[in-house]
Image (tube, rainbow, N blue to C red; front, side, top):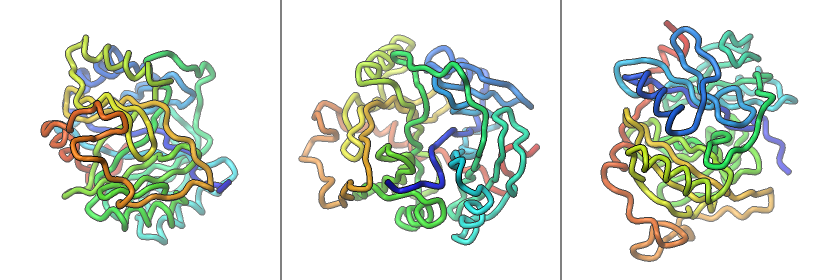
Amino acid sequence: MTRFPISSLRSVEIDTPDIAVSERFYTQIWGLSVAARQDGVVYLRATGADHHVLALHASQSPEILSVTFRVDEDSDLAAVAERAVAQGATMLVPPGPNAEPDGGMIATLAEPQGGVYRLVQGDRHHADACEIRDRPSRLAHVNLNSVDVDAQAAFHEKALGFVLTDRSKLMAFLRCNSDHHAVVLAEAKANGLNHIAFLVPDWESVMRASGRLVDAGYPIGWGVGRHGPGDNVFAYFVDPVGFVVEFTAEVLQVDDDYRVRGPDEWVWPPGRTDHWGIAPPKPDHVKAAQAAITYRPAAKPPGSR
């Protein structure tokens, strides 16, 4: 099995124009809970061991601030960061102690297309990790918009040690462990965030969590269905300030024997958008929301004041 210098996707950090509304949505409706508060930032955890999976900052407009990956304990954090720099990233904060509540060591980079990546090692974990039906246990993947998917995929492979698992016409799927993908890169007119996917225990949890959202007044944006690449069950929603978020489950587990398939093999029959054939076409308002969230300029990295 390939040894990955980065072992997992840990968390995503976002700007919200109404932090109180966002906190209420993600805690009372989506199923996260507050792990910490520091310097005006709200850190939200799932039911798993990760210190937090989502960090909320107050700002004038919704933006993605950073994506955090956990570096394997046996890897050299500085070496991983330097390899990323050699592949075109900019070092924003060199490796050193992390002053945020998750602790450990951290390095912060601006990748070539403008996203900010935080690499953490030895970060804090929760001892009460568990799975609860219809509540997220961790992040499953982050889907990032890219003006050049192949160049961005090559950066993840050469700089961060990811492996390409599948390539559809518009998307590249990359993994850093046995999950089919931790990062998805989607062809777009501007770089930024497409959506954040939260893992729930099973397909029925996707259904029950979706029912909870519907009861709270948030209709399903797209789904429920089962994806092609990754074979995961999905339901998409648009949160109160415009971020697209996904409940997902049953992500395909792969190893080095997995055969990468290309665009010619990932083609749906006319009228179908998922394996089951029950997901309707994605509505225009969801597509617009998936293209609307851009990066905060890296010149002002997350955590700066």
